[in-house]
Length: 208
Image 1 (spheres, rainbow, N blue to C red):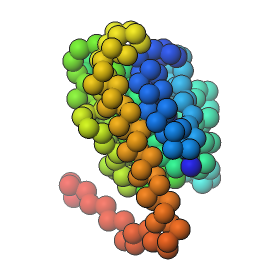
Image 2: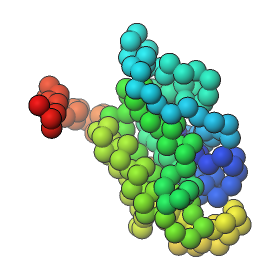
Image 3: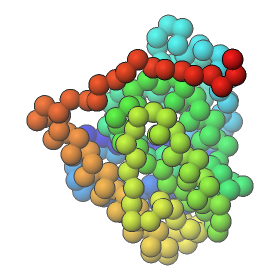
């Protein structure tokens, strides 16, 4: 089993990375492979809803000049996802927001794979950013993994984040809970538990 951890900070090894590493350590203790994927520190295009990703069934974004398609190639080989972001103006970073809009719009292999979000902030805005990231899971049939508190750490530097003892413990608990849920899903598959039966999609417009 493998979990892909997305680092949505422009800083490669900053506060968000520090928190993700704490989660990854617990996953690896349970023999679950991890990969921390950095979205990069260059501009990422926003989704234009052009539909190019669905024209040929490739599940690939029409824009191919940033890290989105590189990450999409990894989706089929992973069993769970953790998205991390710093808090910018009480929301997720602009980079990960643009990244995830296209990542989920173009991708098609997220359903029934557990997902979790973590946020890193100096002081405030963490719960708003955390809620924003969780919405990608709840529209994609993904079980959400929780911890003992909302998944956040506080600090202005990696060293300060490590001093947030409760925050770091929350990250470790998240890793343990993700590992447990992945193992439960794997055991269910092996015992013949089938996925939920899907209905034909109903779409209702409010304006007629």
